[in-house]
Amino acid sequence: MEQFKTTEDLRDSIKRLSKWFARPIVEGEHPTLHVNPNSTNREVVNGIQRDDYVFSGCGNWIIPSAEHGLSFSGHWQHLKGIHRMKSKRNPGQRVHVYWVLEKADIPEGLEFIVDPTDKKKQHYLLAATKKMTVSELRSKLEWVADRMSVIRDAQDTL
Image (cartoon, rainbow, N blue to C red):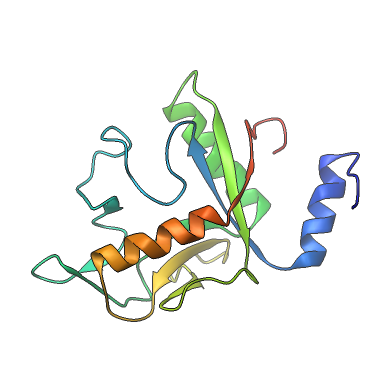
């Protein structure tokens, strides 16, 4: 077991492990689902924000898309900017960073892809790569959340 003396030591160690993906989350909220009624002002279906994924016309299915998915940072600079934005929008609340390594066993039908609109290639989407039911996607997002590590009150770390 390795002891880290500084944040830089931790960053260097993570860089050697593999690619990582992270999401800043306000304390009390779920890392991959919108389960709190006030966590978003957008429409939510079974904990999934409707504009994160492509829903079928009936609303029961998720359609694969390389342009939609749950938002993740794949670079420290991007993560710092998103963390800063979350902190400003939620004054007085702690913001934690949940992260997972690319090598983690991501469920079949989900994949981390570079956001095609991000020229710097620092923003990633956890995209659906196969058609699945909304409840199936929810289960897979819960599975990913269960495997995420957390940096509590990450402001000082970033």
